[in-house]
Amino acid sequence: MKTRLLLILMLALTVAAMPGHAVNRVARSIYVFGVHAGWSGPFGDYSAIGPVQVTGFQTISAPDLFDPTYHLGMELGKLTNDKLYTGLGIRYTKIDLDPLIELSPTNLRFHQFDINLDASFYPVSPMQESISPYFGPGLGLGLTTASARGYSSESQFNLSLNLNFGIDFRVWKATDGRSVITLSSVNSANILATGDRPKFINIGGAFKYFFRP
Image 1 (cartoon, helix red, strand yellow):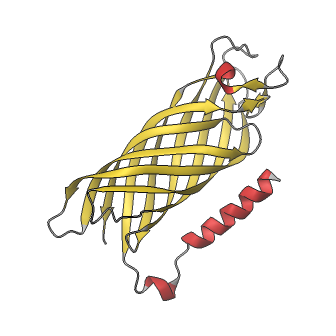
Image 2 (cartoon, rainbow, N blue to C red):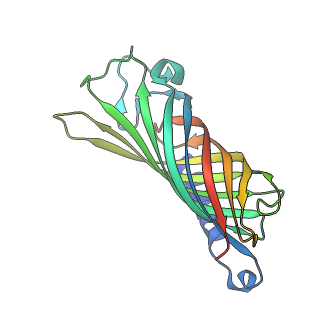
Image 3 (tube, rainbow, N blue to C red):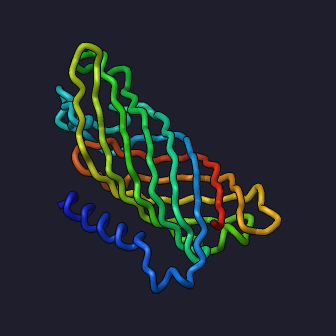
């Protein structure tokens, strides 16, 4: 049921992000490129880590299974009418286990890779205001991988529904007003996920470049 719901939401968000010629002829579009990094705190209950079962537990809570970790990413998107943002991004999250967790083989390493489709609303325009909050939903296509030296790696495909929120702080604006650079708070939470994808609350920062073509 979760997978079906996420697929429906992903389709709806993809359609919303597609250009509509009748509207876009009059809409003012601004392109956005950003790079971000930050802290990731795991939450939820698990019986596996992606493709690897955690033996000895029926379920185990995130604080007993994972340690806090970090993420890195980049995103390219479009801001329409200075208010509606749609973007496509990639994110890597290092999955760190609690040192007390023992798996076989003992040198297993885990990684999370995501492609995110995001849609956010700006109550005030980042092109016009020096401080601009935003919020909105996101959908992720993920891959949780497990690898160990001397063994074949395993992967699990998964989907996630995300809640994105943050604030853009303008640090530079071109004299012609056609581009700005922001130092931004970029945060999200994986509120739903399929399979045993690790879910994270992500708190991070970013540099964003807004520009008109």
